Image (cartoon, rainbow, N blue to C red; front, side):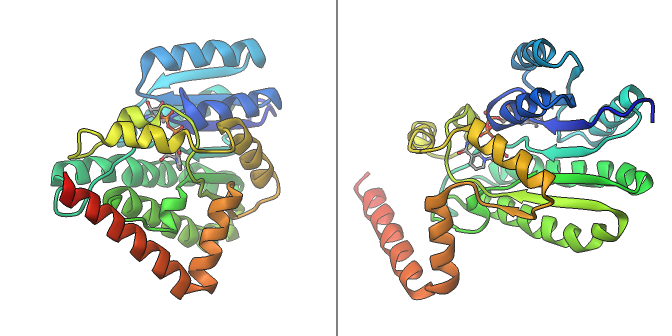
Length: 273
Ligand SMILES: NC(=O)c1ccc[n+]([C@@H]2O[C@H](COP(=O)([O-])OP(=O)(O)OC[C@H]3O[C@@H](n4cnc5c(N)ncnc54)[C@H](O)[C@@H]3O)[C@@H](O)[C@H]2O)c1
């Protein structure tokens, strides 16, 4: 190790939850590396990080590109000599029925929301195995546990991230690597901007859903920080959605009834338009 500062690497760190987590770690005195495709927001976030902790870097990285993620990882290693925590956070929104969504939107969503996480886990776990320590955080979603209609590719990618995280939990623990999977419900960020959908109203719909939250990205960032420190595996930050998850597991007929009613309501709306 070149020095003993603790280090965190965050994908999608220029906005929303990624930025909130970057600032949270910076406030705690960690060295913070963020990667994002949004150059302008990346530069602005880097400035805020430098003002807070002075020990931060930003790299423009598309998580769809394995060699770019690998180069970013190596830059971090050159700078600090080790990586304590990686947070695979970059993601996009997608919305639409199975019959209507294009296969191109499916592939695009999978490439970022699932394969982006896979690339981060693969490349950073290689280093962490060599170090004999580290912690991987994957930002999934409540959509990975509760699968509402008309969110096909989003639900599928987030459920896959939960499955991957659980797989790694038991595979990597013997190498000193902890895993946390985060499953938030809706909260206010710029996520709606990225919405892939066959429906031209989808972005407005996603924006409306994000605005319903009673907790903020900063609240979730605090919870992530604490969960990693305590080596907690699953984090469900929203109380309301946590309750729905308990219904699904322990009162499945009630859950199926509610979800059935929601599906019927959506179908009736679609028939009218
Ligand atoms: N906001 C919510 O309600 C919500 C709920 C559950 C889960 N999430 C998840 O939280 C994570 C963060 O999203 P957010 O809500 O902060 O949205 P956001 O749009 O504010 O932030 C996402 C960031 O990821 C970046 N990004 C997108 N594609 C990328 C790529 N190919 N390579 C690198 N960076 C890329 C974007 O530029 C953006 O800065 C996502 O994985 C999202 O699915 C969000």
